[in-house]
Length: 386
Image 1 (cartoon, helix red, strand yellow):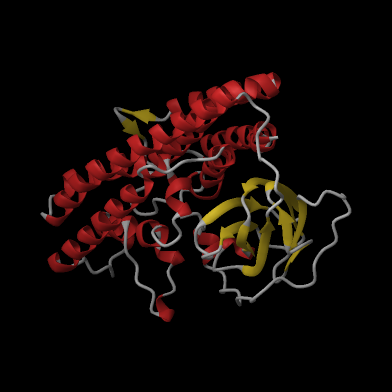
Image 2 (cartoon, rainbow, N blue to C red):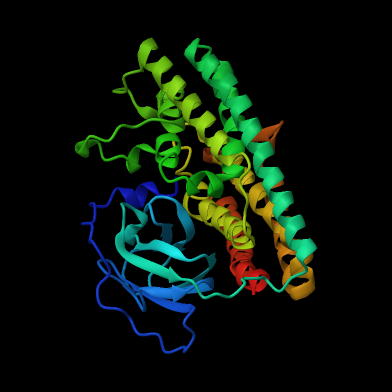
């Protein structure tokens, strides 16, 4: 999950049923939609647009970091998202949207269900293409789909081993396997998150759960806390053997469901490229801050896995990008290499140092490298799909 502990600790925001008055969009392009967000409003310039490549320009005029989502009709499945939109900044989200009903949402503080509104994509009657060679597009889609299925299969295999160890109280072996198994999830996190009902069951952190509202905490991180009780504190009550087995069975069941849904999925170019961007945003909002793996301190494994997934998505569309914008292709290739060089400095055996071993200067260096990559990566979707 994305929500930082420091943000989730804020008082819960009231859920507003819909966006307020529409913001104006003077661009003259009916597929260019402006979104003006603040701490208690989400103004979208229109509630409908013709099918095709849509660009949402999101400006945050509030005091809290926000994020913007375009959900499918069910309000859970993600069609596109842009996270970590800081106060007084603007970011863009480009998606390829077919005709149908959607839901927009701004999430001040990056928490809760957000400030939501209905959005309709009408049938433009136009064939939506990227302008790229059809063979290159097909190659990119097949390459990325194969990667996701491979990682999903590895996730199921290692999760099965992990929960078996945990259920049998073989904690040392379970702790060793935890970050390895998690890496498969982190590499395909945007795909996993697109299934809105599964993500909170599998990847919610304690701060994401509204216990007062009767929400239950399940998934990876409740098991993580139980495996690293020292950081959880003296008052932590270890899970009973029966609860352990229940948590393990639940995680495995949801992993199997995820793998089942992924099988045979197809991915548009915008999904691939926005996924790469989303993975870097995951790094910026959770891994670089050390908040994702709060008890195990294995954040650098997740960091590496997010970078792996983003690089794989980039490489899938790289031949298309090389035709359209070779300078951007070269810059992204260089920035990925620079970030990897920094990560490699923190390897320890087959894994990584724990997060608490990093100095502030080392964390700052990693953060700067992430930011340097994130900026050109934010141009990838618009360049590839246009």
